Image (cartoon, rainbow, N blue to C red; front, top):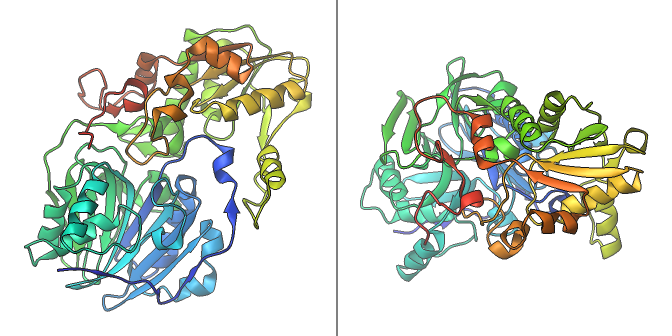
Length: 482
């Protein structure tokens, strides 16, 4: 049994001839964010608002699939949510159920056929899939499926699960999904939509976040609670690791497709990926980041005149550092939010210009001062070096860099775009070497124990990792490597 990918979407697809400078602005990117709603007459409009709230999780493409119970309406495109969706498109996304997706292309490349939700003609009718994360065994499964006759029409590993479902011996969709999920290894939060039901699943380790909320009689699912807040939904609970939830005309039913494995939500969700107003596994992200900054000030004190954070994810940690150290916090770096994020067929000069005008130093704040620059991470080192130089060019007398996470020494295989050790400066250099490379007067990282104490965790979670994935710091991966 095979599936056919729906390539010509009913409402339209956008494929602008653009090149993005977003990757040059920061050093880490996570794959995507998902949002779904069942049982609301304005499902597509609410999904749009939910995706806007999740825009930080993916800025290269967006899509929404809605249904009225009889047929799908689909719109997808490359670019920001506001660039992809206009009011006339949303009006044509009919129905009381929908799933949506924002994407950063860590796997498969930034091509329209990889923008989710992916839509297929399945043996039971239309089917759409959106996921956040990455499958460690995607290539092995894809090779096996191709040997069995499957034809893949995208390079996204999300398509793997649909082919597994198509080859399941189970005719009933829920059982086919459950069987397919058990073959997957990696990090994922799946939303699967048909005209009759929505199926939601989270990987057995809980590597990627996924929350369940309620809006009146409607059920809402989102990668982060900030998206629930954006549409006025009440948070009910987190989807449990290894749990599958089915929503249809009979209501909501939860069941396990796998036992809970080693619990391991990605620590970088708290350090960088998630929005500060989100709550993940009972922990507020802003509060956790402030505590990281406070702990960092205790572990690596420095004599300075001003503390500044790198916008946006490091602001909370910088405030915490300032409070604990007694050094005033100032807005020494400003992010230009109104610079166009794309250039048409750029040359190298335009690329460099795009990088420079993304972030500016406040001369009146840093000139003649000893500055503590707080950032969330150093991955490749290029961004840190550029920001240190920006501060020096603005007249900073000294620049002391403090990082509110441990040294990133190992690659991530779960949907973050660091896949080899060669990319990581801390895999080959120690602190003093990195300090010289980025041009700082001093450099310090938060300890692993300090990170875990700052985040904290509700519930009795034992072990050195305390329920987090720390693989990029320690090399201890919670799943098998394929």
